[in-house]
Length: 239
Image 1 (tube, rainbow, N blue to C red):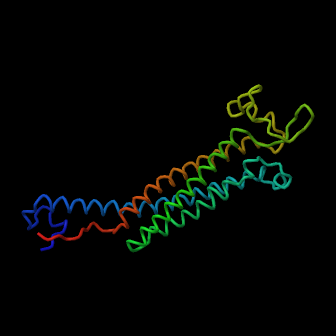
Image 2: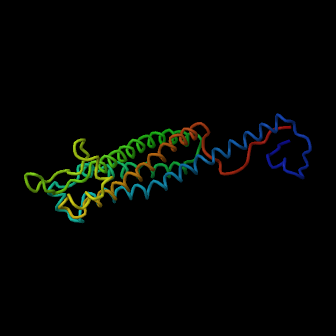
Image 3: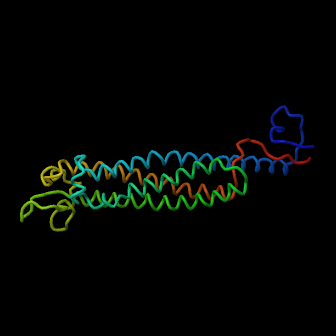
């Protein structure tokens, strides 16, 4: 006689089930629940990474266009960390490719196919983790060093990075906002521009790195448990 999990609910005709069979059914039921979470989490991570990648790409593009004018970029007068474009190819393109793969893999059918996809998603997640971590590190460096701008030096107006922290001068412009408007002559408001955009890109890419790190664990869990069945059913056993 086949017995399902629902047969043990109050009012069931089954009045005696030994402890070993009950334990087996409960373990199978909990396994199904864990498997369902693997696919759902994979899809949630993929969907969440898309807007974050777009934010990083837009932030990096704006960093390349102070005053929203391309002439500074064409003349080579843009902050070095912005020209590395880690928000475009790192937290942007690579993370978007990973997000697309995550969403598609969450719909994969078949035990073997799903497990092979989980292995691929673990690799995608590692790439996304490295790309997002690199973008976050570059953003933090650009934020701490300050923007490239035209400033008044001892030899006259010069393009450089006057706000970078130096031991014999000051600890950095982030803790001294009086330097924000009195040092850089051009581009206009470039200090505030860089602070806001590098902060947004750094925080967003750090969140991407956290999600990719969690997805590595989730993919490994999917590799072990297989695909979620989407139902709270277990295989019957004979009693």
